[in-house]
Structure formats: structure tokens, C-alpha cells
Image 1 (cartoon, rainbow, N blue to C red):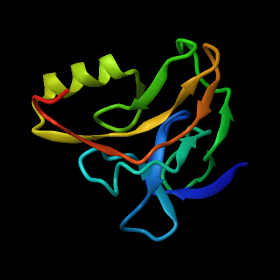
Image 2: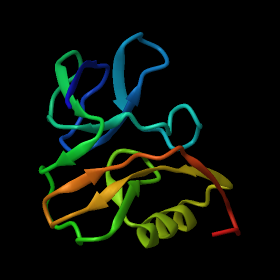
Image 3: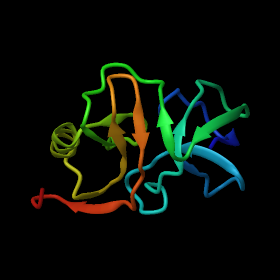
Image 4: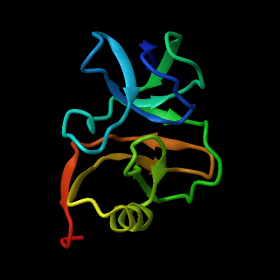
Length: 130
């Protein structure tokens, strides 16, 4: 299944996205600092500028990546706009010095280029408890 939304901001193909809280019906990059902002609705299938129509894959597979490690679970990065594995998420979290942030699962890689999208509810991660 594919969904289409207007992008409130520029987006890159493969980027995890969420519904904007400021402009009804538009999408933005994930924001891992709030539970609402960290709730993924899927991944962008297009690279585009603000105001353009963006296709979003909310489930199924997204054959748009390169260099994924098959069988690895991927999450939204601490900035929310690209995918990372768990060790990379922990490294970013520790380097940036956040006291807490939300960890959002996006999917599991099937091949180096295909992600099986399986978003999950964001989990609050607190510094010192990873």
C-alpha cells in the first residue's frame, strides 16, 4: 500500500516520516525528542522539496536502500531523518549528550536494498539506561 501526502519540508527518499503537528495532513521528518514527533507513519519513497506530493510506504517493503545488513532491525536516527542500527543509535545518543530521546523502530532489512517496514511505538530511552 502507498499513501500520498504534501511534504511540509524537503524530504529524502528512505527518510522516516510522521504527520505534521502544525499543518494538517502534511508530513515531516521524524523528531525523536517528542513522542508525537517520533511516531513514524512510514518512509518517504521520494526525494522532494517542501510543498511537493510525497509517496509514503506505511508497511510492506521498500526497495529503495543500499548497504543495509540483511536481518538487521533499523531505527530512526537521533535526528530522525535517516536509518541506523541499534549500536549506531546508542553511539549517536551518547555523543549528543541527550538526557532522553525516543527510539523508533522502522523496519528489518531483507536484503541490502530492501527494508520490510514494521514501525513500532516509540520507546523512551533515558541516558545511562541503554
